[in-house]
Length: 195
Ligand code: GDP
Image (cartoon, rainbow, N blue to C red; front, side, top):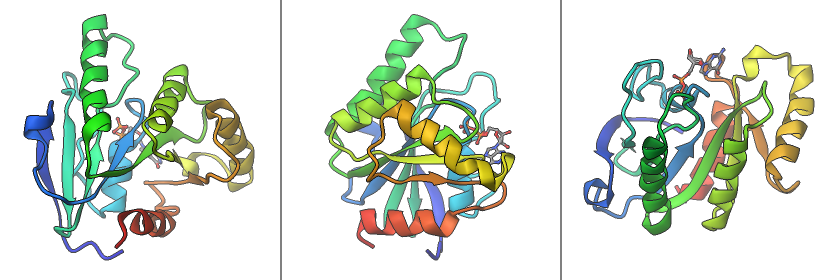
C-alpha cells in the first residue's frame, strides 16, 4: 500500500461529529496501552499521528484518520483503565456502541491484543461484541518483537482459545517497533476496503 497522505479527519463523541461521506472505514479496538496508536502510526508510516497513551486525562473520543482521501482508520477509545469510574465506563460503552451499531461506512473491526499476554475478560467482551454486530473481527497480536518467533504460535493459540476465534480466522502477529507484517496487514485491509 502506498500511503500518499494521512490526516486526522474528525474527533467525535457522537454521530453528529462523524464524517458525513461514504468513505469506507476500518476501526481499531483494544485495551489502553496495548499498542493501538503505535499500530496505526506504523501502518501509516507516521511517528505521531495517532495519539499515544500515557498522557493523563486522555479523552474518550473516536478519532477518524483519512488516508489517501480514499478510506479511514477509526481509533476507538481504549478500555481497561483501572482507575476509571462506573459513569466513565458507561460513557465509553455508549460512545462505542453508537458507532458500531449504526455506522454504514464501517467495513471491519480489528481487535488489537498483546501477543505476550492472555486476553483479558474485557478483550473477550469486546471480541464478542464485534462478532455480535456481524463483523468477522480481525485479531492483531502486536508487540511480536518482544518474544521470540518460536513462541508466536503457542501464544497465538492461547489468544485464539481465550477469545474463541474460529480456526478459519487468522490471528496476525505484528510489531510496530520492528514493522513485522505491515504489508501482510495491508493486503488484508485492501481486500476489506475493496481497493
Ligand atoms: P495505546 O494506548 O494502545 O495507543 O498504546 P501505545 O501505542 O501508546 O503503546 C503503548 C506502549 O507500548 C508504548 O510505550 C509503545 O512504545 C509500546 N509499543 C507499542 N507497540 C509496540 C511494538 O510493536 N513493540 C514494542 N516493543 N513496543 C511497542
